[in-house]
Length: 207
Image 1 (cartoon, rainbow, N blue to C red):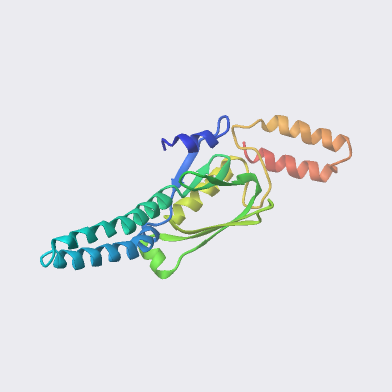
Image 2 (cartoon, helix red, strand yellow):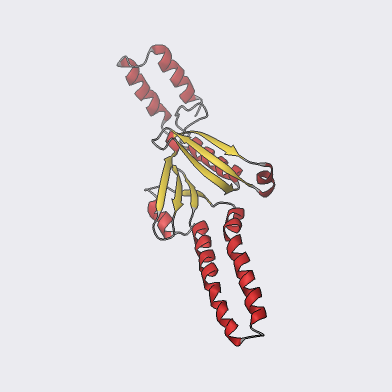
């Protein structure tokens, strides 16, 4: 995604894996009132203009719902839910930006909720439970929630975090080096021989 502001949030060697927004239903619901108001104004003053040319001035009232609709569209467009190879980023705001980060290493669980219509039209809620001060972060009515959740779990797996919450290096990491560090902990008495052998065995399964 070519977004200068989003790219400015990224750290060194961090890359974006997925960018999502709330489902278009959310946008439609927010601008429906403005659309109805504009239709009413058009209908009233189009009929009135045949009786008085000054009635055309009433069309200027279209400016207010039109501006409101544009603002709603911009708010929807600039509310982003981003998955990178390190974290989940939530960005809100048109000019003033509000950014919330959830580091993947602190994500304990990801819950997805889809209603009957959500499954049909492909939207749902994603709740991220973290070990940070935020505790939980809820993304409501996000589009394609299954893809979003999968992208998060794959990114977390890529960092070496497995379903049981323990952190083990991926194939690209230095497994022998990790074993050496574990052995040093064993020699210092921090790990028992049994714990060392167990963790060593788990590390070797990732080669």
